[in-house]
Amino acid sequence: MTAGVVFLILGYVLSQFYRAFLAVMTPYLAHDIGASPESLARASGLWFVAFALAQLPVGWALDRIGPRLTAAVPLGLCAGGGTFLFALAQGPGAITLSMVLIGLGCAPVLVAAYFIYAREFPPVMFGTLAGLSIGIGNLGNIAGTLPLAWAVAAFGWRPTVGAVGLVTLLVAAALLRYVRNPAPVPHGETKGTIWGLFREPSLWLIAPMMVAGYAPVGDIRGLWVGPLMADVYHLDAAGIGLISFIMGLAMVAGNFAYGPLDRLLGSRKWGVFGGNVLALVCLLVLGFSPGGGLWWVAGWLAALGFVGSSYPAVMTHGRAFFPSHLVGRGVTLLTLVSIGGTGFLQVVTGWLHTGFAGPPAAAPYSAIFLFFAVLLALALAAYLFSADRR
Image (tube, one colour):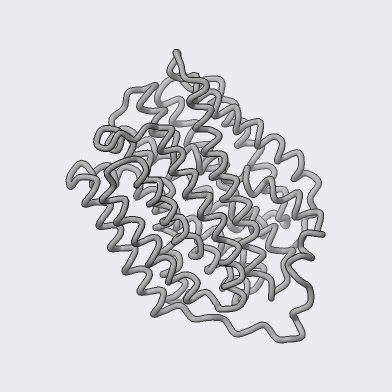
């Protein structure tokens, strides 16, 4: 692990924080600037959309320019600038614009680390390193729960967000200083084009799992835990932060567990499949009993966070189909599918929240959980036919 990789992982910690912190901020933004749950769902969804659309130029830049400038410049200019705009926001529109900018800025950091792992480490280590990166990165997810709630209560949401913006600028400067670009791929190893990847049937079968293996936990933890706990269980920001914290810890543990699973099982496919069958069970239980009791729901949310954190394992499975000179564009293509789908589904679940508004108060959340259950079941059916390439 070089210093550059360490700071890329720190950049991903920030990325996870930004995609998850709106759940805790919901009461403050509603009170101070009139942001509704639907407007925050739209802002959070557009973060994912911006993040996803940026993957196409990011993939090209990784293969042609390298990870140093590709990661450092957008993180500093877009993510740092967007964070300061958020801290100064006077209405929901400014929140939406700032989330778009932050999404663009965060887009390169994790795939830049993946690029380095694929080019400079043995292939058998990719899954472990990917799981390690996402597991550590989910500390940002945790920082966006109870610690954020404490900081906002002590200092106010505007100064707290401004301080995070300053940290973002410092990490971007460290990336510029410490990240080193891998050596170019030898000319004889550059056969094939990115368009050839679209002719690989298994990638089409893996792509739905790239969405379903992340969107349920990403969207529920990042957005819907806050409104669920506020509307159904009447928790304040500290209580929401605690439940989010528990789910976030479970997601960290799940990422670490999935990382080396391909080496332990001798398969890149069946660990993902089995884990997501368990995630489907969690979603069905939550869908049929979102009002079953605070700690009942919190326990199932934690279980979902653990077994539903298969993103690094699915990425490892997909990465096995990419030649070295297309690693940048390959992993960003899968990231586009995953994050773009997750962002779109946040918007869809915002519509569901409005369309199924109660009474009872739990009705919209039941619809959201069951919607994710159907999505995951369909993705599992497709994934079952993918090739298990090692």
